[in-house]
Image (cartoon, rainbow, N blue to C red; front, top):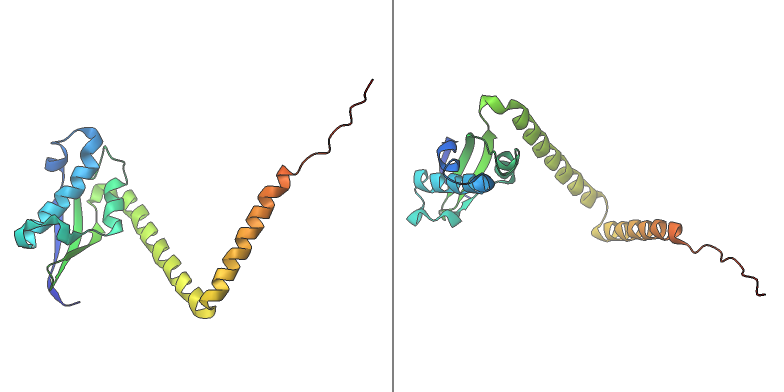
Length: 159
C-alpha cells in the first residue's frame, strides 16, 4: 500500500452532534468524522464510502453511549493510491483521560489476543486446533447434560 497523504486531525464533533436528538448523537458523530475527512483528505466527490474508520475510533465515540459522544477526537488519516482513506485512533481531549486509557487497554488486549492466536497456529497445525475445539465443545455439552439427568421415579402403590 503506497501512501499519498498522511495527516493527523483533531475533529470537532460538538457542533454536529448538537444538531440532532440525543438518541442519534453517536451515529451523527461517526458521519461527521467521515464528512470531515472526505473534505480535508480531498476524496473524489466527497464519497464517504471511501473512508474506513478503525474499531478503536468507533469504541471511542460509543464509549459514553449513544447520547453523549466526545466533543473532539484526534485521528490519523492515511490516503492510498486508490483514494481510500483509512483512519487510526490517536486520542481524545484531556478531559477524557480515563476513557482514553480504557480504550487503549482494549486495543492492547486485542493485539495480545491476535498474537497468541498466531502463535497457536504456528505451534499446532490447524487440524489440531479444530480437534481441540471439538473436544472442548463435547466437554461443555456433557457438563450441561449432567445436571439434567432424570431423577428416579417414586413408586406409587395401587390400592
